[in-house]
Image (cartoon, rainbow, N blue to C red):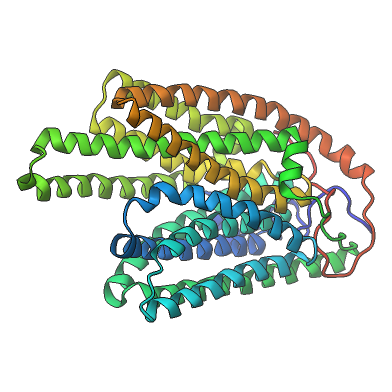
Length: 478
């Protein structure tokens, strides 16, 4: 029997509640049905470990760049990463067309692990690695996380994703929080280089968990007599985006979202520095107290962002998706950002800007991230791997590059904080317009999925082939 209308799932799901202990514990976060608990927990564990490893490596990056590189490298890194991704994304696509899904996940992840071993050796030999490691981590961040979310998309139908992605996303939120806490303690005790090996070991465990998930997938397929899908089509990720309006809108949204967010990060930093000078003066004798002030502001910011993100993921995300759907959930983030920058125009203050960034980043890391991942559920399986990689990697970094250009122009024109805030108001309005068009395209994508899949043949293939370029998830309520 061939199942043409949905992405592969590990276990057959049936209506009704799974009465297992895991399902009952997960019920406040998302609705888990019979046969879904194991798959969902393993996917959440995968994202937990990926994000924990990333935040360990992010801590290493900061230690290296401040001692071996310099703050100026941050201004140029995004452009360098975008240029590297122009070559890496086609290479990823070519590799994805030659191997099955699990070999893709294992191969890419272990490639990055091998890079960590090389960085460890070079660092121990005294080679200055701050700049290449900074560039490498920016690429690792977007490529590996996009790959694992693509894997999760491939294993869930549209209806399942809307219910289960909040739980899977909680894994990433907790991984980011606990990974950063663990990294801080370890790096103070051992220095940055041993932490590289710990992160590499965690990433290697990710491939073990992914393999376990894949084995469950194959058992389910054999039980249901489902023929494996053929390999991915050879079309590239950039070509998919160029010829599909829905994918183009997703890419455009990611560019604008990242432009607004990174411009906000710059604005917040500029505002905090200016506030410290107003409060304590710009003389050398006030340097220590100004550093304490700035450090205290950022310390509170990161703590509140993590708290808001975890609380939203735990108690709000699944309920919001259920009530307003993916389209409505996507509008919440730009509306909050728009309201925040309008407040900045009226009453600019450190506390106002701080709380704006708390909710901006907290929503982005929880509700916004989960809703963006759900956009890929009704796409073709080749898009889930190749186009998603291009969007989450290249187009995200393109937003950073544009932000650097905006800052450069603004600095040359002597923009004040309210002027930058006004620019972000205009960008937020553009973001809302893009999401409105995307919502319409999303509804059409969901409606077209059944007829497109029914018309697409599913040829026979070997048992470990990758997903095909046509089969997608079935339509459900938006």
